[in-house]
Image 1 (cartoon, rainbow, N blue to C red):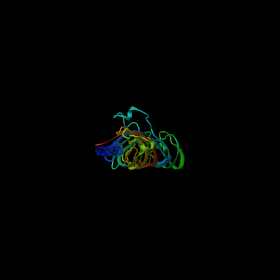
Image 2: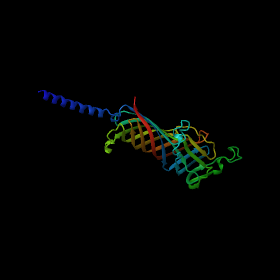
Image 3: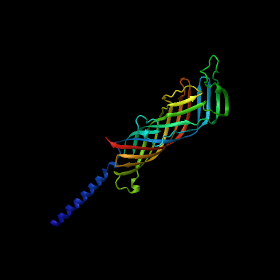
Image 4: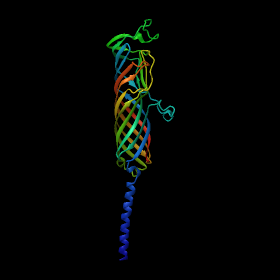
Length: 292
């Protein structure tokens, strides 16, 4: 009888130990995301589609068709972590909150750089009719009246003095995003996700563009101030590597559409430009995830 009692006690102990082990597994920090915050900082490389850029102001109205552009990479540099120089490289900032184990909402800033390629032959359509030097309405000496003419979808070489057009301080996309996160650590037989975890993540977002455009249009004085110019939409997919529960590296491919109908170009408030294009970003980010 006493022996049977020992067997029962041992059996109950085994059950309790098993349940405790399961609870320990369930209570892993990485097993649940709901209620966690995260923040990340990183850098990007950008590619842009061709774009028709329309310029309009006093005595001119023309469109440059199929303009091409590139980004302005800084490379691996201390400016990414120098608080006084963080706007010089192309950067990405994001902070967010998990509303469930698989879904998060976030606010982000993509600081891209857009540089129109200069000294190219492009198709122009429109007119330029600036007052000539010496006339009653003449602008300052040397301003771009020398480019006067009617352009009827004509291939035209654009010299350096005709136009420089950059969103280099920068092409600032401020957005909100909803994203899904899926732990795929089991595919790699990772025994303890609190030490190392792999997640797939996808998101869609939308927001507005606040560029600081540096343009030298027909030798006029540039505006070069932040200005609310338009809106954008984006979608991304990436892979997240989380270390020791709280630190992660994330690699993303992000594409989107930007429409800016109201770009400031010169000191004259009537001078405006407009354009729309698609883009692709390659992003590397470093961040932390925590629960308050």
